[in-house]
Length: 208
Image (cartoon, rainbow, N blue to C red; front, side):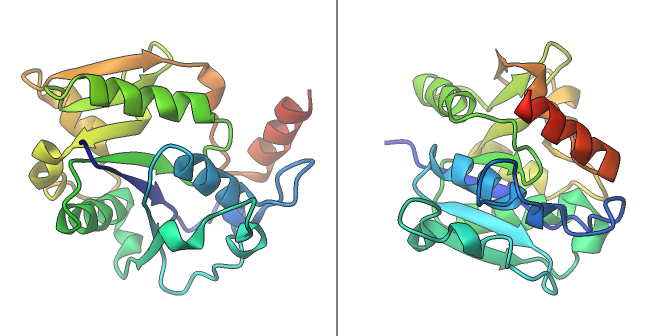
């Protein structure tokens, strides 16, 4: 049986937002943006790793740590001391931890992707499980691979070579010999929430 571990990258500085975007309350709910993303990830995997900054309060997670929300028994928090280096530091730490757990693959998701759906994540996991020969399976809006993305353990060593803000896309785009598959999803899945203006637009889109 293929073991896929969830990996939520939540160590961003939220510098352009001016406050923790993970702690922003999602419209019409009692959960935060970060908790929503983690709950979605947990719907697709048995165990989730969450990479955070050591100094980052985890209050964004607590409102949903309830029977109907996040399952804290299936969580492992990974403080990333060198998170300031960029996205790659978080990805390296998460993949290393997943490898130590004996994972066959990781399902990588960003903590500011609240428009991703359970169906999208399930389709990525299902497709990877159906094709054990695949090195990766990624979501796309027609413009190449984007997170969420499933990475085979065969790529874990290559993840260790990433630096700065490089992500898994660098690996899958630069190596044509890798066996991968794209799953077409609604472009809304990739809407970023980095600034107050984008947050306002995200709320408008969700409510409408």
